[in-house]
Image 1 (cartoon, rainbow, N blue to C red):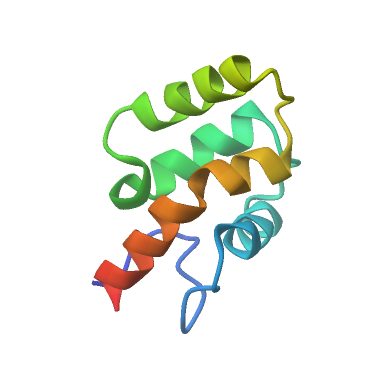
Image 2 (cartoon, one colour; image 1 turned 45 degrees about the vertical axis):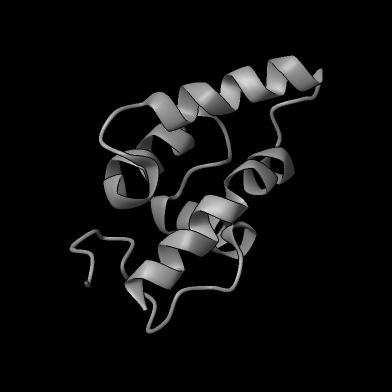
Length: 90
């Protein structure tokens, strides 16, 4: 299924969520942060779900692990979900 999102610019999806996120941030013209995460989630409900529960889950995960909200942490959190999503889309 081809996404109608303005982020659907790739002939094939990047191998990891980190690369996907880097490309998305460039296309959105946003630095990494809450606004970029929410915009990305709204552009890709098939990846993030149709509610903000995935993003809230990330916030709880960061708090539970005593980590920081960084691009690398978000990429790590989302990578398994992303790989399943890429597998479904293939």
